[in-house]
Image 1: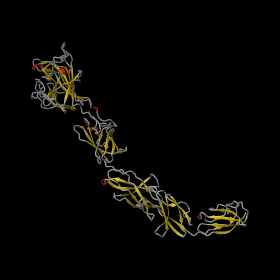
Image 2: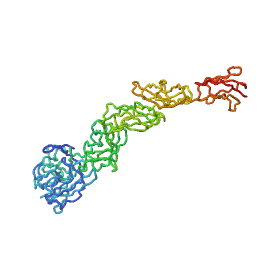
Image 3: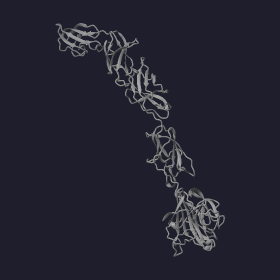
Length: 640
């Protein structure tokens, strides 16, 4: 039966429950203290090492002193009084900060009889300090021998008292003895009494009263029974064991503890919710942890720091190699470190592998509004490109680092290359020669780079207007229509394109037409010479103009030469009616007449593709009309 025993004296935060347990002492063995007491009768020896940290009445101890009169204390200088007294007591004659098990007038090593010994047995976290009193004579009743044992348990800080037999010398000090606990000031005691076992009335107490434990005595009622006894004193409160109870959390609804460090720091502070960790289980190099950012990328841990108190610590600091810059949940995951264990607490408590602490950041400055590229304007020299992008809105300039400019390797490609940066927030125009506008179309974009975290997302890109010949008509050297084409411009929606042409040495372009399409047939001039051609797009309010690269074409004087003999025998030579350089004369009209002036063949766009295989041999006549040239007439002979 277990009952909470109210203390005798003032109430404290540390209480003890007293209960019966089976009589099961450890072996009466260990280091003998014979010869170490200040006196074999009424003596004290010590200090001795407990072998672990033991909490008693809220204080931790690693040493103890032994009294020959049946008590052990955690404080030096205790009195050697042989006559027991009721506890609690502040009297200087009463031992304090001690376990009495029981306190009465014992005589150690009388004529070689009776030994007191101690030993620490077991391994962490289940070690025990065992102090044994074996067959000690009683003063004045030296034929009466007592055997009992006091046991201190690691971690749970419980105290066992096992009494094999305790006789009663009624002729000395009234035969009284005390079985209980006494605090250091002498103001609080916990003693064994009938309430601990639910004994019926009359009530009894072992607080400086007469009582015996004698297995050889028959016919007595409990507690003066014929059985040996076991008693357990269990702490409730400060000494319930330094079990690690997990880390404190700002979010009690979360499965994992949540901590909230400030932004732009490298430090994560972890505080034990209860108990403590063992310092020696923590690797200061941080191998007990893995840190992941909100995107799941591993972050390097620089070190773990803490301050130990008796190889225990209730708060640690994990330091990342880089600052925390991005809002969101980072994850600090417990792993087995290089010491091959996780973080350990007392009594087998501690962390498990893959336990996780959520490192939540929500106060970092964020600006992720993408920068919009507004315009890409090719300069007349075909070497410079002027890029214009938007200015950030509602932006804290404290966090600005620079603009970064990117281009891709071809229009609409996903492969982007950084090629320039701009360090002034107000500079949103850049003239660059990094890209030859005549090589082909490219996309350009700008991003904003912050001081404390990376870049904003990519915004809309804008391409250069890459102008090129649509087919051979532009560069055939002839007058007439020349076809040009270009990719759609992304600078603004529904772009309208103006087409300009000028003689190569002129500075002012002649507008020759507009279109919303991306192809255009330009009416070439009639004067011989070299011409320059470009396309421009203008936004709705005419604040931005995007020019294409400049391309060139020539008008040259190329004669019309007609071969006037045809031998349509299928040998691949002179099988067709042929006009030299016909590819430069689109829209050429041809008419063939026989000697009676009858039309035998005609074409509105001749391409050297007619063979008179169905006509008889003989003399014929041709008429060739080429755009912007005088008609050409002549005889034609067909030979078969």
